[in-house]
Length: 271
Ligand code: AMP
Image (cartoon, rainbow, N blue to C red):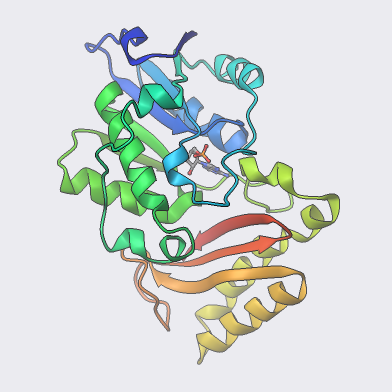
């Protein structure tokens, strides 16, 4: 596996089909599954590892975001990644006032309300990485549902020639969605965290038979709150627009974001 720190070190053979997995590192099974899929489906797999400062708000966890390059390097190598791109901030943002990519509407909902500017940072870095790597296909996880929709809109709006592939959420055996942030959880918080998925599953099972699904969503939110969560949102939404809906129809999803202690977790389940 080649480790490239600078754009100029990326000598990509463009006659090959290139699969790309953008990440912020601290690899877990969710990342590794994306990488394995790319390795299986392409001639060349490039993974980027960059903790992108522009997608963190003030007071968020940019400084303390888990970083372990040596471990990540070994893991990426073990699943057959060809190139690990590990630029530093100056390499990605050489100018202070850089051009930004903003995907309107979808970026403003839900996490956009609680993390203003977050999706502008995401869209900008993904667009830059697409232009640097020019992948045939890029892989993302449904765990970050809103992020997936932002990327879909950006690729469509800007006519980017990259195919997108999405993977289901990889979970711990007790249902907690894998996340680099799970390492922040205390033992006690970790034992409560699987309740998110349990409540999402119970809601999914109940919603279709309910006269008043809103009542069900509210009581699930109450349960999570009593267990110690500070909920940002728990909602039934249209899968394509993330607009809130009252009754499940067509493609929809239940989405959750909330804090347990100091750790913010997100999860969702598609219906
Ligand atoms: P991150 O390093 O958190 O930016 O994530 C890099 C990619 O891995 C994104 O496309 C995420 O959606 C995806 N990802 C993160 N966690 C999971 C998970 N538990 N299951 C599937 N994909 C995931």
